[in-house]
Length: 438
Ligand code: XUL
Ligand code: CO
Image (cartoon, rainbow, N blue to C red; front, side, top):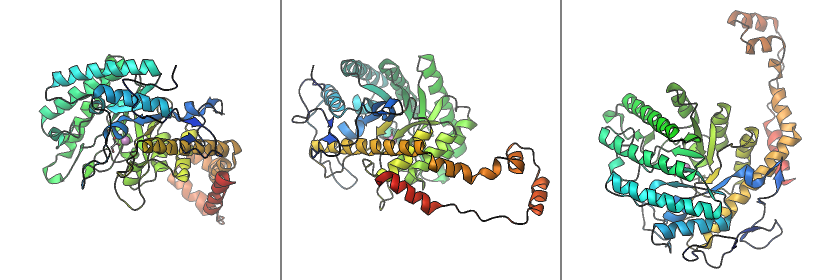
């Protein structure tokens, strides 16, 4: 049996299965750090990292931007060829999972029934490819933002007829998910927001969104979807203001509407930075709420304020993210999905391989270092010590809710010499560099 899937023809000729060769290797088409079978803390790297390739960026995007036409010409010409190319790529690069929007993989159509019929056929095709290769579906989603009908939103559209049309896509996508054994289902509200409050009833729109998600949850559970529903926060782009701004906003929304038992968060690095946070901030907020579901791994550009969706190569950034993920005990049914695209001027077929190799090696390194930091325990004990005044005495009573405001005042009045305690930021940053490069 071939090491990779080959369908009607080979779409990435001349490139074989990408293997781990270690950091001494000069072969650019090999992993230097990602050794899928290496055991770390009782699990393989493959099981820890649960990498996924994004259908849309890898097999649909053509490099076009608002100022220019596409630059990347794909050799696949129809749904079947695209699926063949995708599964060839997944098995050559070795991502055990993939993710897709309905119309990435399956053709869109004017009528709901035509759309459903072709989606069903595409799902059967994808299921056959999954069975042949063992590649699994991390999540799918409905694209309810590209078509002109969604210009005023999908579940938050002021026109009920558009909301219902979006629901037909979500229903079909949940049907596909269950057929494909998807582990999660994503909602990203690209146009769930507003351009101006002058024409927007925000309260009504948010209530509609909650009702829509509730119906999707109920339908999914009814047809046997056992995984997590995920909301992917993003503050803007394409909408001027998107309702799912960041982790904290989405968590509040889920709790307000009683959705927090079924929904978790899909955190994307470049969305967190667009919201004025760091990647690890939004991961930490989600993890602390017990709602960290999955990750869209990418990186933005320090000089640009938009969603550049670049492949992650910054080990420092990835390390800080992996420290949260390792502390969270992993991602459970989630994974690290490369919601990332090669640059408009990266036009060789092998560039898609270099991009994924870089992303996978970056997170493999980050996993190793984050595990080393955890096992070493020094940073963790510094963190614990920083809050030790709450471990006993009055501090503990405060945490237990046993003190009043007057008690606090009386304690402060008796406590005449409060020592100054350093936060030790520079020392910690130096320690991090030593873990990385020492
Ligand atoms: C857009 C984005 C989407 C979602 C899925 O910024 O991240 O690709 O991940 O719709
Ligand atoms: Co994303």
